[in-house]
Length: 348
Image 1 (cartoon, rainbow, N blue to C red):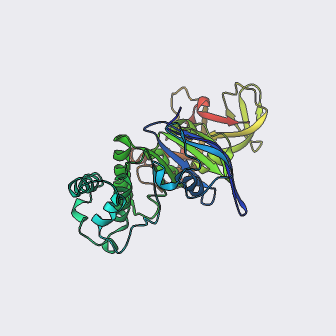
Image 2 (image 1 turned 90 degrees about the horizontal axis):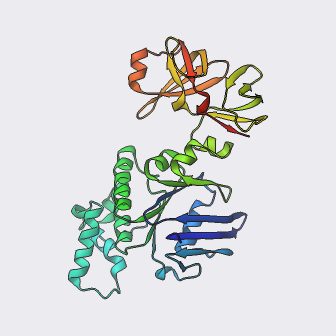
């Protein structure tokens, strides 16, 4: 049985309903719940933590049914987006707070405080007041305070949402390190790049339901429907009619060769931007789709560039900075566009 198993979980809260949620986390998973605000991601975390009682369904942790177990007896820890540290206590006192009432000597408590302060890289802040800390430092304090309880599963609610780019990178590395040390993590976010960077498994939520789940690579490369495709950042998404055996027609004009092994008659096609090759002259390659187009827009991102090319429909291609400079692509340039038929995903 999985380490954390959620079975047929449902709850109605006013006009909102979480419907028939099923989810399995294995020991050591970094599982991301991905979805827009208001779809029920945080509600699900709060049910697992024991803050909300479900109307139906069960939660198992290490084979034990914890569905109606008291909060303090659940071996899970939840860290909220707003950190929830105690402003009147020092960093050290915040980390030590969960140890109150534990049958530990002063020396044992001190040892644990320093151990988890070191893991979260805040030993230099132990005597500081929390109201003087940055958002990234506060998040580390909240993590240390939760990790000191040694939870079997760590629940994170948008832990990177309010941090700047530099702090996000630092905290992302820390979360990876915590996970690699053996802590199972269930992490809520609306940011698909965050999901790609951290998770080994992902579940996409929409309107109170899980619409797709699985290994991160599988979900992002093979979206189950148009909502998942759009939400996971795929921009080349077109309604098409299919002429047997291997042609998709878009807008009645553009014909694209596809691997239509299921003989789909109509539906939608997805072409990932990373699969589209741009060049100044036609390439001698195995790509069955070759077009000429005009560059409409070039947009820089952190590690690559998005190039919008009009071939009769607008395609979004993702290229490296090296390729941009090598081919001297500029807006208004004519370019050759190619991609393989096997790179196209068909959604009936």
